Image (cartoon, rainbow, N blue to C red; front, side, top):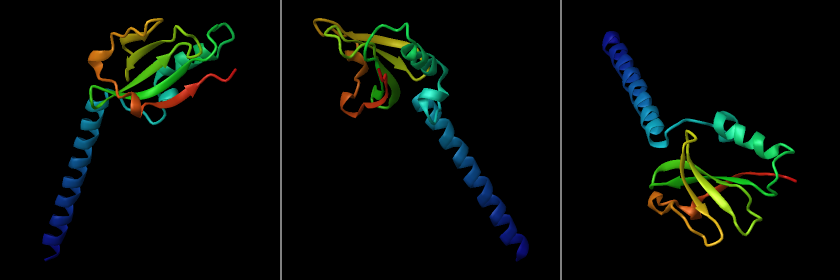
Length: 129
């Protein structure tokens, strides 16, 4: 009886651990990368914040938003100067790849094919002047 109970406990442990590993792998493949705080955990985003915070950066109000594109991919919208009428933004993948640019005087965008959910974007950085 004790061997049967012990065997069941061991089997349950293997089953739970196996499922947990599979869930983590699925999460990584959906988002393209893993982070707790993107501003400190993603090297390319940390470098972007350092650039924006430097005294040499001349735009007055850069912002970074976390967003969802193509329904389930995590990305980041970087607004280079949100106070400018020529506000330009760049959509980056979680890994820092430039996916598209948008904005400008006429609001032109080549980002339409990425189906960005602008309603769910979350401000994660704004330069404090």
